[in-house]
Length: 194
Ligand code: 5GP
Image 1 (cartoon, protein in one colour):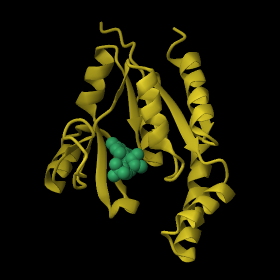
Image 2 (spheres, helix red, strand yellow; image 1 turned 180 degrees about the vertical axis):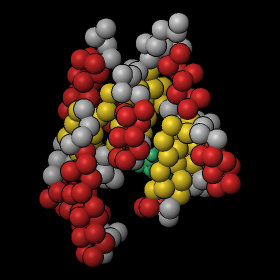
Image 3 (cartoon, protein in one colour; image 1 turned 60 degrees about the horizontal axis):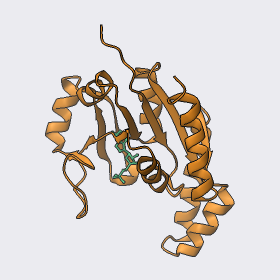
Image 4 (cartoon, protein in one colour; image 1 turned 45 degrees about the vertical axis):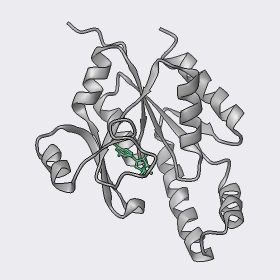
């Protein structure tokens, strides 16, 4: 029998909530937590490394993996022009068998599906912006979106925050230091308490 002591730390949240920054700080702080590398059909960005940020594959390769049931969960992410993202079953099972803790950065639906697939091993954490008002102010200040785009984005965020209530834990990103402390406290109570 294999002893599965690794945990899956599932992190999701509306875009603009500061998910990536918190994740980096957490992985700097806890060296035994590794980033879970997903497959995606979106093009690689200049700074990204194959096998470190993602496994970049073609749509045909992705669909083959879906057909062969190689993905635990997968989603078409609309805000990314309908690109496909998925979590490899073999990647997760290998890590868990070796007792490794993985941090999974997933979209909200993917996060909920992942938790359903591995209920015993998962801790799901939802990252929220302090409020819709603060997010609106940040978007206005950034000045890259039209008022119409800002409205659409805020509506989507409100919907996402509703779905986020189904996660095990919530971290409100008022500022990075407090958010990392809150996140760490959740880890202390869940994965580092055994
Ligand atoms: P980006 O293209 O900016 O790296 O990621 C876009 C979105 O895809 C983010 O919300 C990220 O959390 C999500 N994502 C990345 N990998 C996966 C995955 O394997 N499954 C799901 N469902 N979403 C993912």
